Length: 617
Ligand code: FES
Image (cartoon, rainbow, N blue to C red):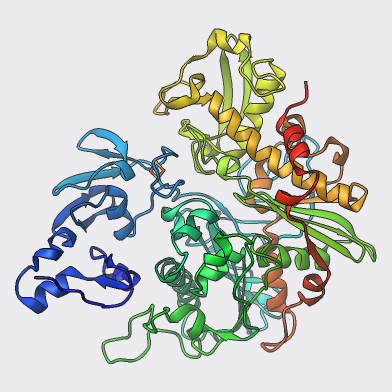
């Protein structure tokens, strides 16, 4: 018996947890349990796809279903559980660690089997996420560090949201003082590849009314934009449904917390890189993933909530109705205007445009501004403003600066090594986020450690372990890395943290790409800028001295570095405060002035990149 049933997109099934569809034949999706109910017997051709296995996640209190041929990563995704899956299941990142019946393994390399009891060992949940609104322009501290004196995420004027996203980490609930509120509210949203921040502000004062921040739930489909694009080349509905639901829930959560008298937002302003916005709008990503890498769709200047957050590509609703058929959404939300910052190109997105708006609104850049804005994510975006001129570029930095592709790399979670120094005789001292036992090493820790390795002569200018390092290095656990140094031993409840020769190479590629981008923009402008703004949470924790030492930032910019916080969110807040619901985004002049440089085809790039991958002696 052969049955092909078109019941819509697989994402339709995700909210039911435990059911998922598979492409049986192109264009058709099968929901086997419905087929079973309809036919009264199991059609043989579909037996392979029936979700008849039970997988247990005791720590999460969840029982999920899986079908034959599924991996544990498939089951975890379908169950909506968080897991680090940097390489999106290709088996190369080693991050999707699970423990099954006492044995550790990779979720994407473990076949699901009935009755398995699974512990997820690598989740990015619990990460502190910066929710300040950018553009405070904090100068590097005298010790060369950014951020709060205690070294935690969160600038002196910023807030780090608690791991559950329920409010500010200091327990203030994330609310600003109610005393100066005008009574009108708008919502600013920054959708990053790694994290998402939803922030309600008073439109009169710009004061924070409520905030929710969380790891982008699409992360289980890969850490970088290319992985997301690959999962949405011709059909973005699955990833689109995931982010619509997460952001929509955050908005409703803030409004519910405000109570029945809450007026609801007058408008919603969103920024993110081009891929994140394509996914939000359920636009296929083929044009972003294939040469010549030119966006196929432009954004409309006028969306509403129902169109962006509530409706999936197939017309179904992300949110269920109440028992009586009425909407669960707060009154008036469905028709609330939604403004989305336009992109400059496929890889220079509205997040950079929003960031430029934010910087020029709040900083004294003068009538003839001269500054570089760098957002160091997996796709490093860089813009150089000089008077009327604006040139931009993006670099494929990869996830190494966020702990991805590093043997013991991890996000900036409690327990991540954020600072390291060499004690001699192959021993290292380190600090971890939250002073927890070492669990791995995050991006700022990698930069700090690399500076220490260079200063100690353990890594050469070309990036090779030296003879001195080989005295202490051991054979790597696995793979082509061959040698590794032990940074932290497994004791006191902590994990054994190693740093391999391959990790050095991954770091060289990432920092070389970012630095080549900065150098080429400066070369195009003919001079170094008056200031360099580091955007995003990453910039908050790095040691400037280490960043200079490893060559990530030109030493010539010493004294000109500013930590700008979440400028993408800041530009959204600015647009929330400016004008009424009909006011256009303040981005037209920026888009008109921008000229993009494609690094891959730039005449200087190959030579520059070879140079910038190297280290100073
Ligand atoms: S090794 Fe499993 S997701 Fe990367």
